[in-house]
Image 1 (spheres, chains in turn orange, purple):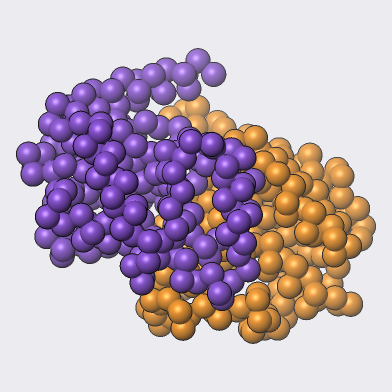
Image 2 (tube, rainbow over the protein chains, first blue to last red):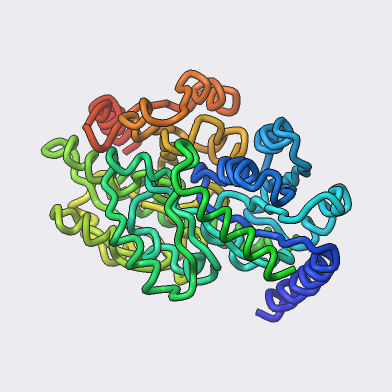
Length: 215
Length: 215
């Protein structure tokens, strides 16, 4: 028990240093968490497009293996660093500290940190972010807050993605919103489709406002 | 490092005891792993229907919180025990040992153990299963083997679920099959839709054959 406490404290200390560095540069970091395949990279790419000319975006990609996502981001001309955790189920603050050294921080306003696809473990590790955001995919169903309450409780915003799939799956939007509200009264909730572009403007506007307020 | 090794060994020892108990009763346990919302409970319910009259099914449901899934299974008259891990990101062998005490083992041929929704951590913990099976949801995309190679390498079968969504998402079935094969040449691959029932018969037949062979 004592060992776990010490690990978390060491991580939190480095997270605090990351946050101070980022804030001193006027950068808002967004710790983006979701299940595998919920649309984290798609949301980053679509949000960068929606914010083009207003806010400069940078990305840290976290994956156990591969650079599939970083390649997609780099192809759009967005500054990006890939972290491969080599098996670890979450990002931690030391990984992010290392990645920050390779990014052009003077050219970034909002830094998306795409966490490893996992609804559980990433929640325990602060990275130095100013916002914690999760994506809930319509394809995953409307009962996920009951099964993974920790992440729904912890985040500043829930982005419900793949709204275009709602007609083709069993999904009750009102039930999902109610379940989220039961755990988290303050989180913003957005409904989007990264495929069709539906709903992205209010999300991007909110994010820009958060950046202007917090930095 | 030494501590981690000891934890795994203790778990493996209890897993071995679970497996011996199950085999002595002629039960094949299936450790079913997948992302949140990939369709684990739906696959269990549909498979139980497909096997009705041929093989008797039992279920252990693993979730961080809630008994949503166990309620669905019990409503079909299937023996079921819910494990709530209380935050832990995977099932382990001691949890399963405890759950086995509450199941009518003399009425079960195939025991599905639905793991916590997570593509990473459950792979490290043996439960006493005879088969390890994962579900890959079409909605998650075709690139998951590159990002989560551990689970795709470890399993005896990959069930590609939600095939009915393929027309509505960007998904290349051949690319997914090739990526799976690159990591795992021996795994069986099934294409199903738990919603439409498509493809379930070959999967259920294979599972029955595994039960008859292994017990």
